[in-house]
Image 1 (cartoon, rainbow, N blue to C red):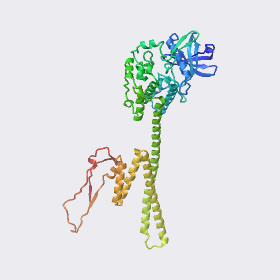
Image 2: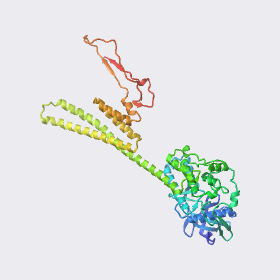
Image 3: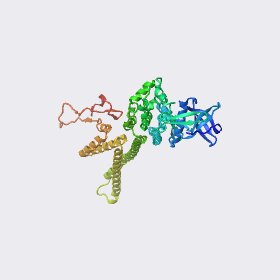
Image 4: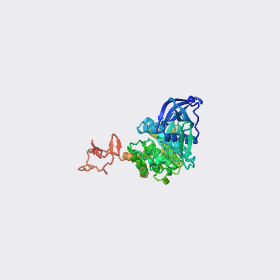
Length: 527
């Protein structure tokens, strides 16, 4: 890769404060005076280390090949004279104003309610899908990232999602593993298959450091990448086995972290942590958080220990996440539709209840008119009665129509969401009312039909408890002067089974055990 000359660089870029730092370099905010725009400039921390310079140049070369909306774009690369007068490598990139996914997940994991309302699971999965798009594009260009993790996913202020830090990236099957980049003072050898050490021998001889591990820290040596997010083959140092499926594993680890707010592996000892990853002992995310089985299956397939068992590509993983989200959206649409139908049913049911009062009043008025108007009264006198009877019939017809509409709407709601409590309760109350009407009319068949329907919909048992509620029996005894009635020695009242439902404050409480106050005791009055 040919670097830009230093001529005019110091004058073109106005460097500002440091905004980030990693193992390879530090990033400072800067202003491009030629193009009048804010940029970010990455500078090598230790210019004297040839391995870091090689990784730095390699990152510039690879990132420049990737032109995708979800991959941070590179604007310039070369050497620049710093404030101390020393020349150092720089990489000019898009200035991303926002935050990384790792810090966002950390805030969500601390239980910030406002953050969780803003960053729902569906929205986070949308971010993850953007990452899948970017990685799929890189794979199509023959490049694997090898250090995918939440800290390397930036989320901009306006929703843009960008994959950053391609310092460990590898070109799969690069026929020219060593390329030399020359500048005025530096000669750097680029290692296509390594990108993290000065030479393959160094990588093979360096053991993983057995000290305290940080899940988000990238280590170089025999093991390249971030232990908590790397694939088993990467943890074992089998660099020749790394391919697109290795990145798919890391994508699985990212979605695992999104769902549980913690990385799939954690530990204080780096060697132990890498051993856990190499064994593929991934704890199921459902052991940590409530996660739908379909989504957990996606995570576990992406993080399968064997490459052959993983998704073959990032887009295949994206597809299954999309299918899950579409199912969530369909369930949400169905829930809203069910609630809407149920609300319509409740309004119709309330309308029927309101008509009950009007019907009762009109019925009394009609009965009074019938009692006051003789059958032989002239037509002119009977016309008000007939008009009142017709009005009463219309009210009853309206009530029947309202109840039928309520029943239909509750049924429509339950056909969409069979467990909607409001619809179940509404239908239960409706059939309980029909039972009582049939009972008042001494319609045994109607009572039986209403009872069967009630048993089907009253899952809480509340409406049945109302029908089986305690009654009140009043007995009034009279003393007759004549001896026409034969006296008896006593009075016996027999009752059926003991009550199975407790009542408190005038309401049935199916969850409480009945007490003495709930027993059926008659009240006898003499007079």
